[in-house]
Image (cartoon, rainbow, N blue to C red; front, side, top):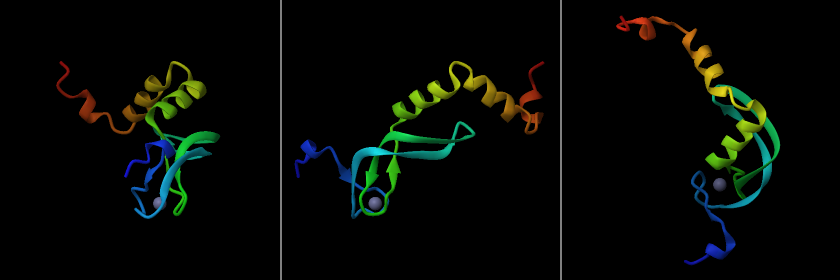
Length: 91
Ligand SMILES: [Zn+2]
């Protein structure tokens, strides 16, 4: 079992297929935003087409799309939800 050369691994979802690096479209909610980005590097299963994106890839994507300010934006949206837990005990 030494197939490091092939750079693929058993699919964690179906456990039958192999996940291998290829380009696919990323379409998922990330940091609370729906992202849809074509030609993203991922490991894609050849059986169930499960796609696993590396965290580094997603962070780079995020930087491309939103530059420096995504965290602030994200937090302000979350804060509007219901401020009670945030507001308590801070004075
Ligand atoms: Zn699979």
